[in-house]
Length: 82
Image 1 (cartoon, helix red, strand yellow):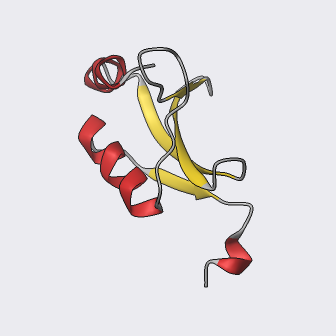
Image 2: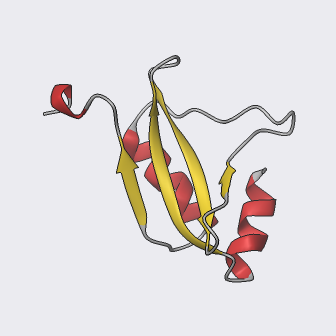
């Protein structure tokens, strides 16, 4: 889903959580928005390619642009982030 579609879901109170996922292929961070039924909606560009952000902070800022919602960080590399 592109940013505007995610904002619309947030405005309709469909999205209940954002999950920030460490993408080990690009070494960046992807964002998946989750609805009440557990369906995931990845944030994508206009071509449907999932967006990847260089840092966790950038990904968190993008979640804030969509709207205020709780978010959780899923990282395969937590041990190296200390």
